[in-house]
Amino acid sequence: MISSPFMDWIQETTFAGVPLWSLLVAATVAVVTFVAIMTLLHLLTGRARTWATQTQSLVALAVVDVLEGTSRALVLVLAVLVGLGMLQLPPRWESRVAQLWFVAVALQMGLWGMRAIGIGVQRYLARHTSKGMTQVSASATLMSWGLRTLLWSIIALAVLSNLGVNITAFVASLGVGGIAVALAVQNILGDLFASLAIAVDKPFEVGDFVVVGNIAGTVQMIGLKTTRILSLQGEQVVMSNTDILKQIISNYRPMRERRIVFGFKVRYDTPPEKLEAIPGIVKSLVSAQKALRFDRAHFKGFGDSALEFEVVYIVQGPDYGLYMDMQQAINLGLMRELAALGVEFAFPTRTVHVASLPSADALATGELLPGVAAH
Image 1 (tube, rainbow, N blue to C red):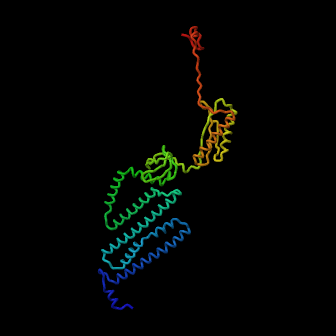
Image 2: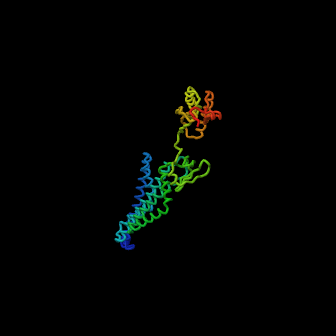
Image 3: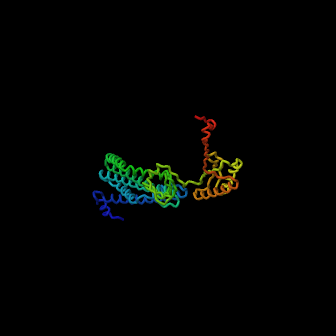
């Protein structure tokens, strides 16, 4: 049992004008509050994670991950502030405690926001990054940096406003300074936003084979300002992101089939019955290749120096080498079949008709060509 003199000493002793027993009560309340918050948070996140895992709820898992990022130091600060609320503090200190409440809560909100942004960026990369790609998207990094900067800017302004700082002029100066900086680096900012547009719209990704203007090659890297393409000739082509988006981009990654149109010509003296047999010959040649699907073959029309045929077939695969192998087989087979049919390929020809001039005797006797009168 505690002796009466000891209790009297506790009640009579003061520290900085505050009774010692009040400090002990405040400390006890702070410890209990800290333990209660941490225990409740641990139980809540544990059960919520179990439920989210069972239901495969991505939103619930994200909320649990964010809550697990709660700072113990800030929880301790909040517990101390709860304990200070048990004391009879001067009005000046009460206002300071209220400001500390706001600062602690704002910092914790910022930490939760940072964790939420990190989780969102990770899931974005997992969903949009191609399989086997180890390079982190520069555009995702740009989005993460921009969101974090915006978050902490808002928190900093809110804290300054709560502390009594007039932020109106400060915000106005930031706006003017931001405009000046934007004008100075507008080309760089244009490339940055173009990089962000590439990340969101995804006209191509690292590893895709693209044709941009007269450049054909494989995309090696998508940076904040430039995109690097390894061309077919072997050199690395560095292009501005803004310039790339201004051009027509042909991306061959989504290609599953190739539609091929080719033509050939035969001589004008080919008999009609042999012309009728040619589309069937072409169809049998194309259908004999397992990787091809025949579409059509027609006697297209009358050219300047030959009879023209047009053939359309589908290569059931994106590989360019496969297409060339199949086209070569068709060309060789067509040469053999037409030779066996007695049909020759046409080549550009021109027939020139030369009219003979009248002889000197005809000119002398006036015997000219019909319709030509002598003068």
